[in-house]
Length: 95
Image (tube, rainbow, N blue to C red; front, top):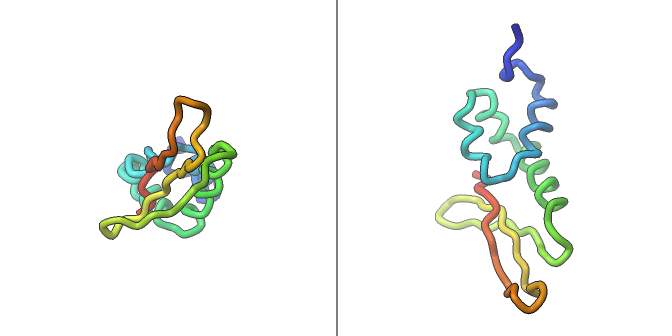
């Protein structure tokens, strides 16, 4: 019987890239193969492109380095409407 860790790298990368970045740290603990996959440059690029597609038109994606860690953040300097102010939100940890 096949298990989820038996998925091809391309298929696993596609599935995992659709998860929100906040889950990235959690999927690393799921299995060794996913941990290794999450550290590949191609996976990181795919994560960033998927996250950009989720962003609204007013928000910009930005990579930020703090305390030797890499974070993907969304930056909205315009605000939207009268109740929403400019903001910077951390979307997830990349490394």
